[in-house]
Length: 424
Image (cartoon, rainbow, N blue to C red):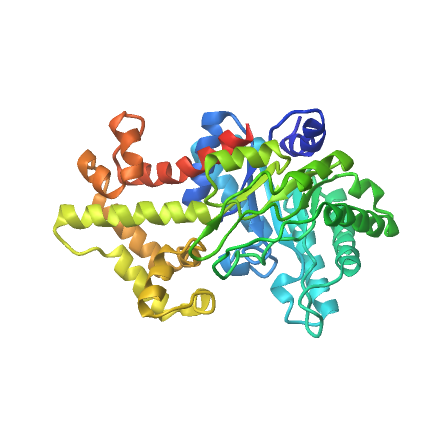
């Protein structure tokens, strides 16, 4: 059974009483992807890695990669760590007109079609159709009917592209009850859960739209509906899953056995909440900023260790602050407060908008210099305890080497591990 077919069996397995799921790694950072593969090897599981329309598209996105570039990038990492690429699933997230929503709708949709073709021909076999956003001159959010019609239009392109490729036919995710790609912008104190009726209507309106284009066989491969189960994070807080509040939404899966739910923004949820989500039918757990948050924590801890060992100032955090101030476009409109509050958010926000800066050549050079300063030396356990306390037990027990790169990978793997354990 191929990895994509394994993904496609999730609804039937859930309907049969099997409470398993899959974690979706939503990151383009090479260390995060490496950590995902290492954890996949350790647990003998498939690895699902997703790219958003903003990260990766035919114009390069903010990573500078096309879908074909992203596949090569990911597969090179898999080969380096010895992960079987046949167990890799690539997903396209929020595929639709979002990168071009400033344009008239028809032009934005035409570019979306080109993007869809590129994703599917590159072997992305999990496709989230997201056409809910208004384009130039349209309301911010569109009606269900227009959203579904545009989603079906993109599915038609996907089906034609898949027919001409050597990859599995795609499975589809429908529904868009989540924030825009990149996450919520403000502090959150209440979330409106998707109603059972709305979940059922999402399925039916898409079923009709697909049928109108003769895509019944494609709709039969729709396996997931994106809903809001009551999980989200803002800049400064996390809303934790309340399974009692989501009981009615979870229960509606009995009436739509073709589907499971896909839960976006599950970052920072405790392990017990992640397991409860899977048990309640939110079988696809998406995580992204939480992984680069852990990466940044580890890098900043190593920066402090290097400064102590060398008797010199920290360089990574100061260098990143200079870069964030020099190029504020990726955080300025999302963070609010006085200068002290902004400084905290720039580096330590749950929204983790600093993740957009790690690919920058200045940031990459700072990280490389940090690794060069620490080299391959064994770091004192007591400094690991002081500055990377969450990793100290694994180091003290001999499970993880007290070396810079190993510690960074373990910091990310420890987060991924909670998702893999919740899904198994």
